[in-house]
Length: 329
Image (cartoon, rainbow, N blue to C red; front, side, top):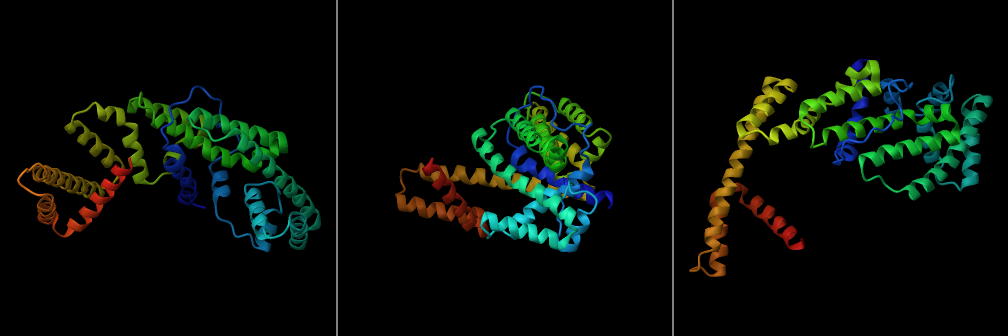
């Protein structure tokens, strides 16, 4: 498998940044890693655990022919749960057992079935614990939750099996959470964030530290860079901010893409200026004591048509939505 394919799968880690990670969690106090660079969990393991697998009978037999506990095991158990989901629990177990025995050697099937039954028991108890623990509300709590979850799994399955079953999942969550807390720490300037991210990469990935930085697509990296240098740019004048943005763009994009982004900037700026001019004119109409309410409404509609042309209706819809939200507030 080529390098791009491996990185493509791991890119899903960074999608988490849009959901879990971009929550404004602060930089954590020192927290030990659940899985650091010395663990056996590498990029390829996350790649395998997050890849799509077609569990045909023959494919399943091949996947578990050497080792029953591998990056596909949990995914396969989920497949079995779904395949026989309409059966009552005892009948479900009978059906799964019969199915496994029918597609692989009896000894392997019995061992895998025993692990599957234990997995179902684990899911039930884990769900109860998660309900009691509640949802994390900060980066520190999120890291603590990962520790608690994996510690319970180790108690339930034993360290080796628990880490083999769930290690890739935990590390794929732990890394973006920790990275996000650095990026979203408003007390840090960009260069300090970069240093801490580099240290995080080294601490968690070791020899694969550089490879992690190649995972996200260019636009994701661009948005992240803006967040990294957020404090710096807040303290710059408009000219300095524009120069920093251009510097980041030129580092990540081709010259053609940079030009297109700058054209978008100019268009957005023009639209903003047009709207500002419109609202100033609208205010004058509202404040004109010589006009009735009906005359004001008619004049404002004409002003919108004149200012926005073919986009006037779209502007009115947007304004109606905004006013509706304001009223609800």
